[in-house]
Length: 363
Image (cartoon, rainbow, N blue to C red):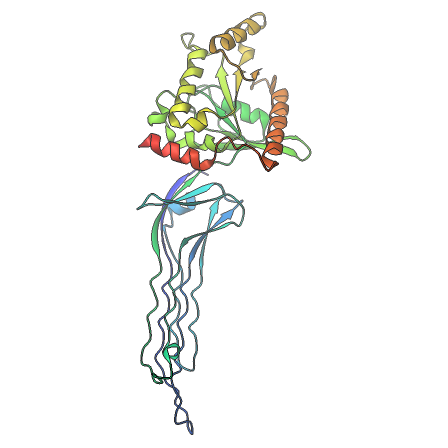
């Protein structure tokens, strides 16, 4: 299934039912009085998180959603039936914006989480409610209010613990195939990955994490070059970035150090919070370098980058060095989870900060 991460839909809440003007008319009861009932409330529109969905592709085919309107009140003090709510199921990680005001209405992060996006209309009042000692035969009722209507822009951000970052043809898809059961397309040419791929990495019993392979980043991505910010945003939710570097590029004029510096600059330009996320350097395709030159080549890359974080040498194709890397990632994520569970945990960056900074960058 094609990965679709943006969609626009129209939602319309139901109108409230009108109040009723009615008077009691029964034999032997000369002074029946007013008995008009209230109308019913209009149905509201909710977005509901569904862990079984992973794309917004369904909204490309159906764009209009409407809740039921409330029924009008009736005599004998009968209240009109309320309209049924409309529930729209969306994948976890969906951010909802009002298309007209660009206001972020919320985000759906948990299974069965409900987010109100259009409030149903309030019911009208029947004439019974206007009865008083000075007005014993009111002929007044109020209409129900209109339900809200909105045009919503939905944007899906991949929910993953680890994101793979790198230039096209750095070996990210091969790595995710070696680390998980995911089977993204792999070929000997750039840009084989055109949409994000998720893989579940099982380290041991009850110890696993989700890894995301996004399309390669090129120079100018923060301004929209290549696939641009369309997929850079998916990395903002990850807890760790693996910066994949091809140490044996097909073109000998390509410098791995310059490629790392280019992507680092793109991350900072997209938003500061993303540029400050934990990032590990993974020197890939080490099997294509003569064994007696491997250490010297990797040491040269690290020295010229002045890299201070963790560095790993792997061959995703041969699965060399992959298992130790996955074990260290699992330990890192478990440590982050322990720190997050503390009441005074220092949250390094919130989704709101990332969203605000990315919006200001695009403007």
